Amino acid sequence: MGSPDIQPPGDLSPGAPPAPDFRAGFVSIVGKPNVGKSTLMNQLIGERLSIITSKAQTTRHRIMGILNGNHNGQPFQLVYSDTPGIIQPKYKLHESMMSFVRGSLEDADVILFVTDIFEQHDEDDVIKRLKYANVPIILLINKIDQASPEQVEEKIRYWEEHFSVGGYAVLEEGEKGGKEEGIPDEDSLRFNEDGSLIDEDDLTDVDLTEQPVAEAEPSGPRKATEIIPISALNGFNLDRLFDDIVRYLPVHPPYFPEDELTDKPERFFASEMIREKIFLNYKKEVPYSSEVVITGFKDREDMLVISAEILVERPTQRAILLGEKGNMIKKTGIMAREELERFFGKKVFLETHVKVEPDWRQKERMLRRLGYDE
Ligand SMILES: Nc1nc2c(ncn2[C@@H]2O[C@H](COP(=O)(O)OP(=O)(O)OP(=O)(O)O)[C@@H](O)[C@H]2O)c(=O)[nH]1
Ligand SMILES: [Mg+2]
Image (cartoon, rainbow, N blue to C red):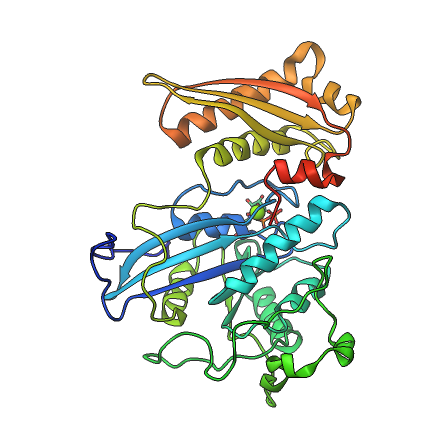
């Protein structure tokens, strides 16, 4: 029951034609904050690409993790997208985060809807966004390492009753993956300008000829294509999940060259690792008010020299971040440096500078500069 065993896919170099039955597709990992989406992506990729903390709203971007392989003779390329947890936006930052979720759902060939065995609050925000998705949706009940078999059974029953989405024909073994015939991909999700999904009730004013999905609503029970209980942390049932993901992938040539692991540059991962240590070391609003900008990144022969600016919104937050005689920022810097050295496999010199940038979470221009511009 461990993580999937994956063989190399064969030659994916630009000149070489892919095998005619090559499968490739985008797999979006979505759900509420803190349910274990990033933990799951890292496990499925076998790399620590996304940062993970016990606090909600750790992930702020769409982070792609690319996996090439050959599964029981089937060559494939999987492009996973880890996404921010779905919330009601309070700041412009949140609106950008939700636009990343929207983009990943629009691209998706398979959706992994991650829920948490102990989640108490409802998942309406997520379900609304999945309503018009016409691709297989695998509902995952995560963190079952913390639950009894009875609790897991109960949760499966709950989701069988409560999860109703646009519906998708369950594929039998051997059938081709991909989108249902006759259901166009475009416009399958409709959103307001603020990034929120147009409510079904509001659609009466909308030209329904542009709503192929309305016709696609199935008459029978509407549910997830599958419900799988998992533990992203210890890998339980991830091999079963992986089998299904590959089975649902469309026949398509690879999207990325074989040596590409992600769509994000090295600087992005450097800033994320520093941000992770801020999430770990500080409480209340400080992690949420902080952002990390890499201002220097020199790859020298003997070491990486990284300069980072940590933005906070208020002078009081700057004081907290620095700590008495700078002891807290020193501790955070050491932890970040160790993590960076592990990730880049090289000695790192890290220099940090804390700067007050009032209300950066609300400023569009600032957010664009910080990479929240989808
Ligand atoms: N016990 C247990 N804990 C888990 C499991 N998966 C994730 N966690 C923990 O749940 C917390 C949140 O995990 P993340 O992977 O950061 O969750 P996320 O959904 O990406 O969160 P956001 O980025 O904030 O939306 C961390 O403390 C993880 O260690 C699991 O299978 N079992
Ligand atoms: Mg995350």
